[in-house]
Length: 250
Length: 363
Image 1: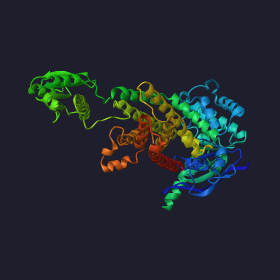
Image 2: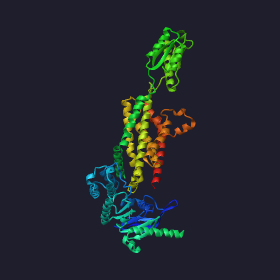
Image 3: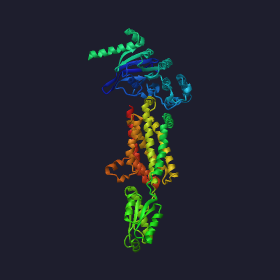
Image 4: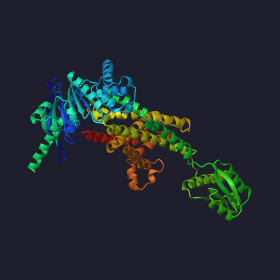
């Protein structure tokens, strides 16, 4: 496995006249928890969707787990886990049936499936609810089950697209504990969020605004450079600066 | 590849059988349609009420009356004495037809030089009933004359369905309807549901290839389609006594070819529907014209040219021909190869187009 797990070089994605991702370049190291921050419509989800091979970039290149996005998408799919903000599970299947289905898709079977299933059930705190229909689960449990289904095949890179939207603060905190655990075990995690307190949890963050990356660094670096006490203020100041620049141009 | 497809097929069955809505869809429409078309929607005429106006009043004319009364198709309910009464029974709809025997009937019958004078006055408000009743009456009268003297010139003998039971005609069509609705609806719903709840994206980032997705998503409905077809076949044979004179293998082949078109249409509908409701509406929007132009109820050859042209690209039209051919005539591949080939062509075209569209939409 390479040391750099995600690489973006001059990545651009246009939808008609609208530029959703505007010339973004960055590298994410192995084992890093990398945060992608920005307001709605900043191009976070579009970037993740390109990296997962769901949409093609207009120009530029990207590599995931050492494989080129586009020509080597098939290999990429075997090496990534993806969890969308919708916690895409089958509501009409039981907890266990969801796990078995996603395991089967990734070729996790037999003894390994039993082990992984046990791991996921324990991790999500669903051991006693394994036969319950997924629709009946509360938000936090659903979220952890969705994460569990995304990591059954032990992917080296995990993409999480606003994984904490719509769950309560306690469940959110528990979720981040799980993320740290995965990162310590060697997984690379690429996560988007618009919760500022979550930005503090990341090893490094990129601030996105109108498709452009306007800041990159560790949370403490970003705060120190600007001499600001919190990420929230870093966020607001960076965006205001960006808007001022644009007005000056106009 | 097959492992992933198997996983998908298993999940699909779990979902179809668990969802109360789809479970109802599997059971209620087939039973309801079979009951309606097998018992209720009956175009046959039995014991049609007729009035008799005998102005000849001879042993011969009375024998004709008795012949009507004895026939299973007729029941003489009124004997009339005046023209006014005749008018009245027809006006009130009390009888479907009135038989008027003119004076001199017995004499003409005996001479056998000119046609004997019998009139059949039919209530034409229901044109279908009218033509059936007049047909039966004419046959009965012709038979009556023939038994008396020289044979008639024309004789009608009905092949394949000698008793002209409309049930025989309808039930193969019911099999087609159920097959169409169920397989098309379930395929469209299963695909749209994945998109609606966001799992489609989850599938697309997994190693599952688009071709595996299509196969895994349609295979369960092929199985369900066949299961339903055999269920209907069994009920048709055992409960309604519909004959199956041709080869079962030919039927299976025809069903397989026809399923290509319904599954293809289902996939196509899923590509134009954002929600499950839209998909359901689209299925019915598609189904109505296809059903009307299939020849199930209205013969295609009576349609205006433009409509007939549309009917000629309608897969149901060929499928119903094959079904009726195999069921009632016992036709073999030597006769049916042509509609089979057309059906296969349409099926490949529809399924191919829909898969292309589906692929393009994923990108």
